[in-house]
Image 1 (cartoon, rainbow, N blue to C red):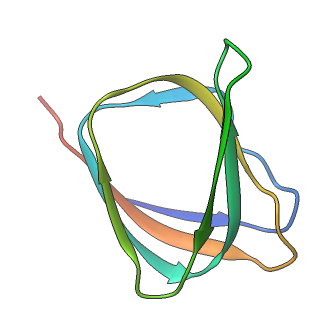
Image 2 (image 1 turned 90 degrees about the vertical axis):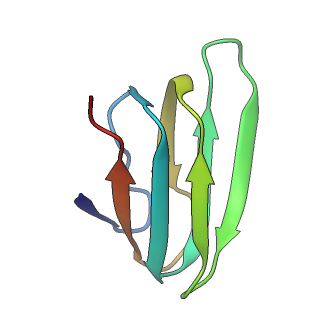
Length: 77
C-alpha cells in the first residue's frame, strides 16, 4: 500500500504497475503519457475508486491546481 500525494505540477518517475486498486482522498486533474506519445487524463474526485490491470511504462503528474492524494494498493507476487 502506498499513499501518493502530488502538489500541482508535481510528477512521478516513469513507472509500471501490476494489478492495482486505488481510493482518492483529495481529487484533481491527473494526466499520464506512454512512450508511444499517447496521453490520458482523469478528473479524480474525493471518494472515487479505481482499479487496473498491469500497465505498460508511463509517466504521470498532477496537471491541476489542487493537491491530489490517493491510496494505491498493488498486487505483490
